[in-house]
Image: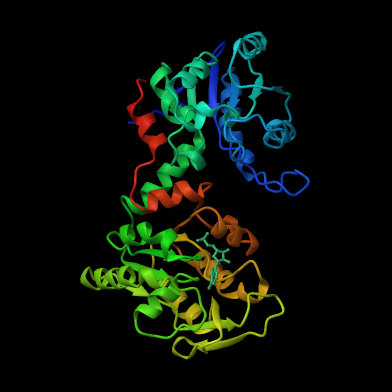
Length: 397
Ligand code: AMP
């Protein structure tokens, strides 16, 4: 059983070593373009401050591969956190060592101390126990709220739980696990999965696992064309992974055997190129011209998919229905976001592109839960355990 943050009380004088996933996107000038990951950490940080702890923050950003690269410094994140939380944040330019420990020990209770990028040290990505031991000197309690990194076995989320006396999950970790379990471990049915995005190869594990668990599965986006091709239908120049046609046939067959309803697009928006000025037309799925590619689901498919989800009690969605980054190919994804929002189901949105689509459609508040972890969420959809969650389960406290 994992212990969560709310089991911690009265933390005066305690140093809580917190792992967050503050791997925020930046533009070409190094400015943060989306700070939702920082905002989602605020309930945990505020709780710890209310309990009078010292909050010591660990995170990574980018892939500096064990080298100290200034473009991946955590300092910009520390500054943004300072603005969002409206409290001083002490930034320290390393994450291990005597000087870091001294600075933490000298800081008053209820202060926030933000340490430099974990991945500036090679031991982090290697799950090195010696590096974890160095980190452990900086805290009395370990807290993991980095769901976005939970599918990785790294020192500051796995090895560290072996050397800290107390390890707990934060509020974000708790929400992510709770909502996912409600959706897939013990769901209200019908349970519908919507899977989209570019390639079957990226989602094959998820599709194979979902077909065992759901009542209906909707497949859209570029990946649908491999399935359509598997049915013997010509897909023109659409994305199609010929080497996965056999796997697609297996999934279609398994769905049939298990009485899982599998839905594919019946029409699509096609163009000769992926371009905002492209000439587009809507065609039935059996009439994609040779030189065209399918780049969005068509209106008949939107109606069909909306009908399919209408009676759902639980919906899990990962991956867009088309190249939604361009307005001319976004209509299918946007319409489906509204349809999902209009259901009375528990609606769980996988991270990454689907999250962006829900934001674009202005439906964030009408979804039950939007996950912060693209890779970690997909890992769960594949039916795999998350190493960081297993580490918390196995920890001493
Ligand atoms: P994923 O990261 O696998 O969820 O894929 C998301 C990407 O798939 C988005 O960038 C979309 O533009 C892309 N995508 C969705 N549908 C299609 C399609 N029909 N053809 C090409 N790319 C697509």
